[in-house]
Amino acid sequence: MMNKYAEYIQRIIESRYSGEGWRTLGMCRQEVAAMKEEFPELEEVKGHVTVWFSGAGPMKRAHWWLTDPDGNIVDPTVGQFPFGVERYEPWEKGDPIRLGKCMNCGEEIWGQPGEKDAHCCSEQCAHALSAEFG
Image (cartoon, rainbow, N blue to C red; front, side, top):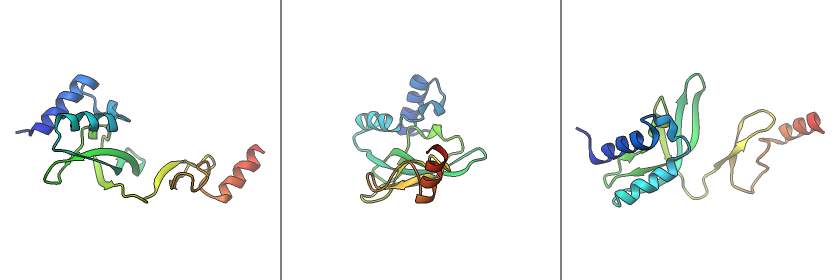
């Protein structure tokens, strides 16, 4: 038997996204806000999730979800992660955020906004990129 949150999520996915959870990619903040409006007892949480994608290994992605009064995770857009979520990590003030990907090597760049150049992950990559295009 599904609870009221699961029923809501199933109904939303079917009506807004043609039953295809992957179409919720990038819609977590909006869907969390909509579900919070429907269920005011839920708490919004922003942070990161660790997920798996086929052949890519674990990846950390920015994400929004909710928790119920008992602390259980309620994630209206979990369907965008075909292999599920390995870990939910709420964001705490001062935690690093994903700034982008290095234009030279493709590694993800994590830090504080304005703290470092969000184009390259290191001085070495910045010099290599400059040498290639300079």
